[in-house]
Length: 170
Image (cartoon, rainbow, N blue to C red; front, side, top):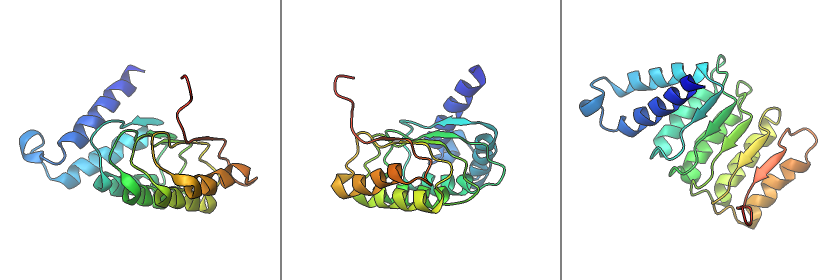
């Protein structure tokens, strides 16, 4: 487990300082992306919560989710400013038959019904892997949650747990 912790910290540092590579990483941003892709393919769990990530990071993660050799099973992007446009990019990666992600945590990522629509579409396209989706502390609206809740009822979809609201008292 200590190795995972080091990777989690490294990933956060990598993304936090990617915008200013001249100060801490005096190499081209594409090299940082390559290093990131190599790291993410080796680990089953990747925690990038509260790393000040935005839409640009989702473009990179879409590519990672499409990688044939990725063993990534759990991705935590909670408390980042991904918004609907970032979730649309992630959803494109989730649609890939190469994507093996089982748990996706997007708590507090400023997602509305538009982002939920993208996620529901991804679950229709690739229903065989994602088992848990955490959307707590977002604004999915009634229509967004209706679309995603329908995936829970779909016998072809593996989704078992949909976190859409904070648990009272917990």
